[in-house]
Length: 289
Image (tube, rainbow, N blue to C red; front, side):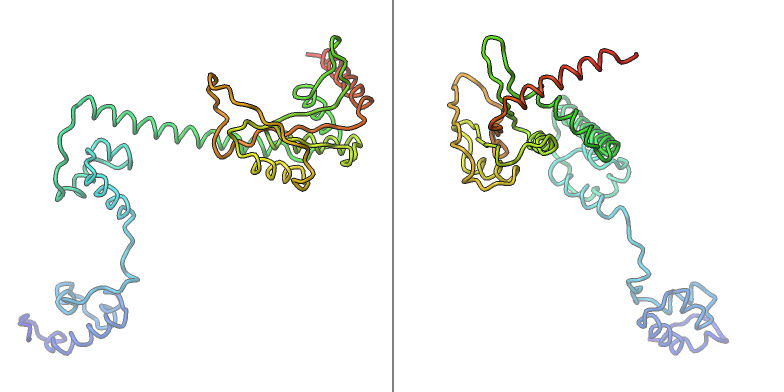
């Protein structure tokens, strides 16, 4: 079909020029490249030469809002209001209106219910921001520790035992070294401390304590792996019966009870621990403010 452009000169053979332009377009050239190659300075002429020919993929700019638009439409179809979508996606109501204007309007909600939903979304966003800040603070703090010297581990271990370990009492002489904890990281530090003070692993005995409602076999495998022994090396597990009047929060698949670590032939070690702790207290009292 011939185009009547009312032009002469280099545009007179329009069909021939169009064939060249289409061939270049299909070869993957951009409008600018075709314009320069064919010396077409008139944009209207160039538009007509390329009429019906889609641009190559590489010339298409990605739209950063495509994902937001799709999500906004999805939420609108679920009955969300503009306010709710704005809080969820963080984009303007004007953009939302353009993206969803062809969709049916959701049923009107009670204003108080709508306000509650909007407040809930804002609170969820605030919680996410707080959690991100919390994790960032923890990561920075963890990086501040660096390597731990033997003396630092020694002092940490003494304090850890005095906080969590069994202690001798005037009314019940128990010079035993026994450590109980449900935190695997505490167990690992205590094990490293025992190595530091020269306690052979052969002197250690391990036992799991767990409520009857827990996964006993799973807990035994878990704690055996933490201390690096076969589960068959554990002593008989202590099963604690659940009091139906007590509301327990340590439940679920991550509940593994506690691990008890006992040191054999440990009276001398216990006395040293108690002495070390007393020395630490004296040293702390003597520090200059």
